[in-house]
Picture 1 (cartoon, helix red, strand yellow):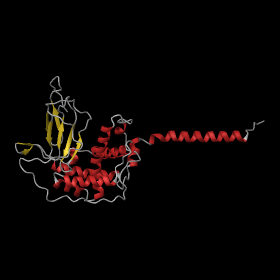
Picture 2 (spheres, helix red, strand yellow):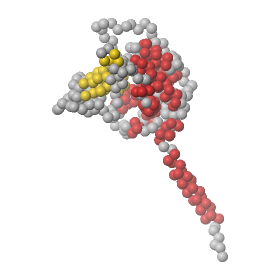
Picture 3 (cartoon, helix red, strand yellow):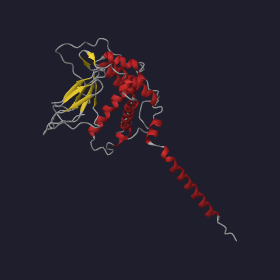
Picture 4 (cartoon, helix red, strand yellow):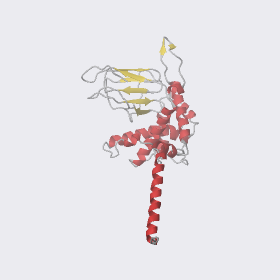
Length: 305
């Protein structure tokens, strides 16, 4: 004789089997949702610009900077012909630049509840046009972005503004409960960028900016500038001045890059940075700055980076 199963018991068994099937399916699908895949999908069309479009605009910006980059000379002649941008900057490097400013934008929204808004981006564009120390280069940058104020806001103003604001908030809240975890995370689905319907005005770059006058000074922007120091080095690349190292009560391993065309400072990378030092040497090769030697407060150094 077959044992009959009560209807209520059968319902519980069916429900349990359904939940088990859903759990198993979710487990099998999880590997396909890798963080990097999530990032690319999330950024497929942020603020009306796809990731590929942002990448193309970033390359256009770098192409302008590369044209003005100093190439070392030997005896009045180039030691070697200046290579193309593609020879010195990989696609991966371009992707990192785009991902970095999207990540910074998201951090401002997620961790500090201060998303960058349209008015801030417009103000940043206006500031660049008003305070530029290299108006011709800034015009080239605008032109490379099609003189489209929306693209300029998203691809030229946003990276500068996002880095500056995140640096400000990190400095104000050294005990941030999120720590630095967000720095290594991929941008998620809530990347905070302007609406594609945002309306911007292309700022006018003044034509009558007075030329440099011998034996006079014009103040640079100090926002996000490196901390005060001495015994540091500074090199000029043709586009920016890179300041690094030095001493201010203790030796420093930090620095900054000042870009006259946008009148803006950005911090130098701390990844694999040489140990803190002062009185070192720094040279520009045409594509990188090399630091060597110096003093660390107790001994002379024979290392660099």
